[in-house]
Length: 138
Image (cartoon, rainbow, N blue to C red):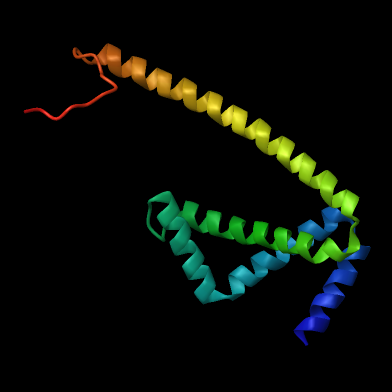
């Protein structure tokens, strides 16, 4: 039964435009999230742990719901795979690598800037200059 359901979903994914497919998959995954109570609780607990907060925090609930929506979109792309060409997959991987390299460069620049500003602000606020090497006192 599951086999035929996946085959049908793959066929349907091939007939549906990508934007529509991703939207429908996200909505379906959120519906599963809302209906599957035990997994919803587990996901909220995981997101609360990631955020360093309690399960009652609305941010943890929101993040859990969004993670399920994104998972639905991912599964949608996975189910669509038999309908695509190797060239299209390679092109999408190139786009992903380019986006990741841009993100990585931005992240590194931000990390450098923020660590520099923390260092200089700590230095100006402290009468003792910070040292990069800490030795145990004897």
